[in-house]
Image 1 (tube, rainbow, N blue to C red):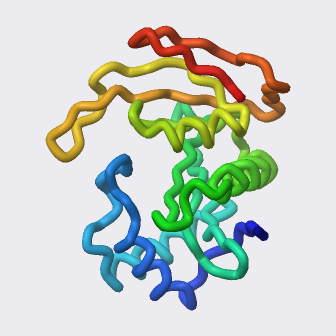
Image 2 (tube, rainbow, N blue to C red):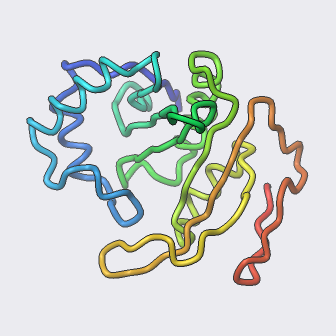
Length: 188
């Protein structure tokens, strides 16, 4: 399967709307409008046009020629200006096929080249094992667990904080171990 990251354009608007109305929102932040409308897409694509390459990298995920998701790295501000945060989503029927693992690898390379950052942070709800594995396969270290940090859809979740510095490589080794809730997290 050929995985590519490409810049978003207004020609992608209808596909963006379809994807955003099809994604599993169980572990996503609430800032993605639901339903996702044409107005939502116009606002977001305008923002991407102004930010991409300056303080963020936004890419559509293309698998075998079809747009299947979104991935971004956004630079923080103030005293956190050398830090950035990764975010991503994929159409449910395209999950568990290695697409996101490859997309994260590629976006990290782009972000470290294009943005003035030394770190990429990933925040993942603790039960989102698939997303945690994607980060771990890309040399993100579990740096801590914020207990009861997220309230979504009537549920309270712990939040796993992952970090990657440019040049981090696991080489099959355990980078960081947390025994929060008696779970051991390792890099495969």
